[in-house]
Every structure is written in structure tokens, then in C-alpha cells.
Length: 308
Ligand SMILES: Nc1ncnc2c1ncn2[C@@H]1O[C@H](COP(=O)(O)OP(=O)(O)OP(=O)(O)O)[C@@H](O)[C@H]1O
Ligand SMILES: [Mg+2]
Image 1 (tube, rainbow, N blue to C red):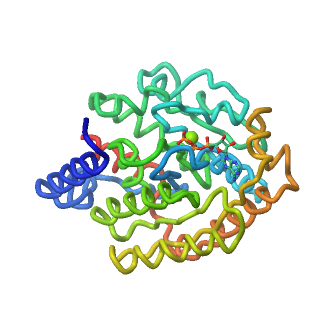
Image 2 (image 1 turned 45 degrees about the horizontal axis):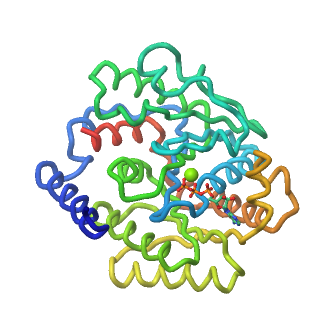
Image 3 (image 1 turned 90 degrees about the horizontal axis):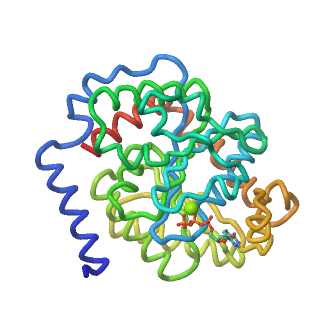
């Protein structure tokens, strides 16, 4: 069996090989022929982590609800190709997924499920898993249908499985912004750093926003945010953003048990307040305001390129 370092080396080698054939997505024909959306573009943010179980799904859902309460139209895409559980935490069972779109059974608007506070979500299901096997027509269909989401959403949050698989890396590379979740556990921090290192090899300009979850207090969280930020700058030449933290809060597992997002069932709890602060920091992202030329269509175009 390969150790983790072996797997990491394989992934990095693969990326390097791809770079040798074609320098970057921006140099590809796919990009040169890409028609930039002229209308509104949604902001696409991938939520990921190095280690599993650090709280990505809970953060994605509760952040989405807080953003929706600020008047933004938010769609979550469940891209966890393993054990997906947005639906469980949301308390809504999806009837369809992206496979139904790819196979012309449904349009993208038909598979949008509505959850609390008007947040909508899409289950990737096997649709995203099979991306690599799609023929030209199916890919074109997916691109056109997903492109409709630019009109439907201000922000699209993509909940992934834990990092380091090819698929998760592709979702990271394709999105302009990434929220990287870690906890204070040394293994989670090491895995977060390993993931940033891989991303940095490919794209130093990626906007990586670091979030510490299950923090005991602000001192512990700031300590991790500062240390990771400084190490990335010094050793990788990457400047990551310190997005903030969410407290370790016993109401979160309780909310999961009753299948309700904690910002609704425990709206006065500490973690709910922390999520509000994170939502405000995301909306107040001045860099983003200066640059509105991305959208879901470019995301899917890039995804296609990485999968091919
Ligand atoms: N801030 C927190 N305080 C206490 N418990 C938390 C907190 N955030 C998440 N949890 C708990 O941690 C567990 C994992 O959370 P979650 O499923 O959101 O993680 P994940 O990163 O999406 O996992 P996976 O990698 O399996 O997709 C859940 O049982 C949840 O209740
Ligand atoms: Mg999850």
C-alpha cells in the first residue's frame, strides 16, 4: 500500500506532467474559444480541507443560510463524491442529481432542491463522478445547463470531500476562491499545509481563505491562522487569507442529530455568531468586488479541462 507521501508525489507528478504538455488552462484551446458570459456571473467558492471530518459540510450549509439572510441568492453544489451528506444536514432528500441533467432527463432548474431560508442545493451524485467519461455532447449539455446558474445565484458554494484526490483537486483548481477548513488538531493542520503546497505548485494566485473550525477560543484560532499564513508565505511564496474561525460548540452535533442547520435551530449560539462574522468577511471581500469576470461557466470549462 502506498503511504500518503507516495500518493502526494503521484498527484504532484501528474500535475507536472500535465504542465509539460500544456502550460496551463489559460493556454488551452478550450479557454481561447470560451465565450465569456456577458450577463451576471455567480461567485464560485469551493469549500475543502486536507483532512476529513473537520466540518466542511456544516460550515457550507450554515454559511449559505447566513449569506441568504443577507439577501444573497445562494446555491450549494454537493460535490462530495464519497459519502455525501448535505441532504442529511439540510434535512431535504434530493430527488434528482446532475446525472439526470447530463442524460437529458431533467434541466438544471428542475434538480434544484430548496432548503431552509431559500438556500437551494444540487446533488452532484454520480454526475460529477462520471465527468471524465462524458462524451462531447454530454459535456456541452452540462456546461450549458450549469451556465444557467450564473443567473440563479450570487454565490455558489461547492462542498467537496477531503482533499488530495484528483477530483477534489480539480474542483479547487477550477474555482477562483477556496475556503480551506482546518481544526486545531496537528494532523488537520499538516494536511491543510500539504494541500496548500499542492495548490501553490499549480496556481500561486488562487485565493485560499483559511478557516479554523472547532476552535477552543480566538487565541488558539489566531495562533493557527497566523502560523499557517506565515509558513505559506515563507516556504511556498503564497499569501493565504485569514478568513476567521468557528468555535467548538456542542450545539452543532445536536443540530446535526435533529437534521437542522445550527444557525436556525441554535441561532443564538456562539458558532452561529461566528458564522455571521465569516459571512460578513466574505461579502466584504474587496478583491472580489474589483473582479467580476468568472462565473460558473468558466468554472465548468476549467473543470472539463482538468478532467480530460
Ligand atoms: N464547530 C464545531 N463544533 C463542534 N462540532 C462540530 C463543529 N463543526 C462540525 N462539528 C461536528 O463535526 C462532525 C463533522 O462535521 P462535517 O460533516 O461538517 O465535516 P466534513 O468536513 O464535511 O466531513 P467529511 O470530510 O466527511 O465530508 C459532525 O459530527 C459535526 O457535528
Ligand atoms: Mg462533508
